[in-house]
Image (tube, rainbow, N blue to C red):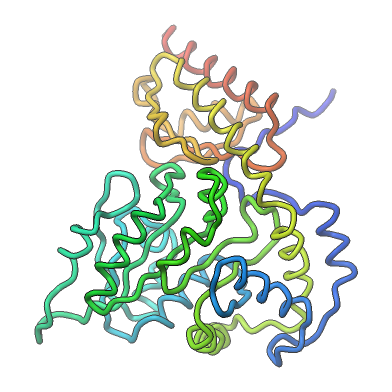
Length: 351
């Protein structure tokens, strides 16, 4: 009996490296990166800095590590950090902002992932002996919990003007920043020019097996390199990680448009199913979030029924489901997912 194909829509982190990436790993020139002697790492970091319009870059193991290093490099212990209330740093990074960095997160609510300049300004406390010193504003682009929504360059500029006027730095968790650039058909530097530093992920839509890259000034990256070492992130022959990253920057960015088209097709198909609510205006990149409370079941129950049909997804709350398109998900997989969701909804209405 043939094994049913699994359609994995849990995340773009489950992407596998291309054959070109695997060959690049095999043939990578290696050295000790702690001594800055790995030529492949050095090449990737130079490429990343140039692509982002910044002075320097640093390869790290993960997005969570990148964010933690950035938090520590931009602040001192006891400082206040302003971030969006649904941000990845606040929700999904195990409290490292407080436990390790020793910072006070100050969450600001927003309607679509981007706090307004007015909201940021209101969150900046005046100098007072009772208050921690505000030091940093963090943005996330695209925004995961808001469904892959894009913070536009004009919004980043407006927020940066508030932050910089008050002496704060602006950091961008740009794990999926290339999705934003491809969706708006603009150079990624339109997003990065107004932030002091940022990170982007290699291991999501760009399909690398591991790694993220921090980018900023030479001074920032030097500090970040030291903190990476403190956190146990100093790597030796890290060219095996950097090699697929080089291939990704050269060949994998433009193909993200295919993921966006598949996400739009998926969202439009789901929007026609009775009992499901979805805001199509928020399906801007490769993430599709929808509410299934009208089906009379929890998201966990819905996810379990999807799994029985060979489709994997994640919950984003009691009644909210997330699907993510990526390399390896084709049009026929999208149509199969729509059909499975429609069947689950139909059966729930029949009861």
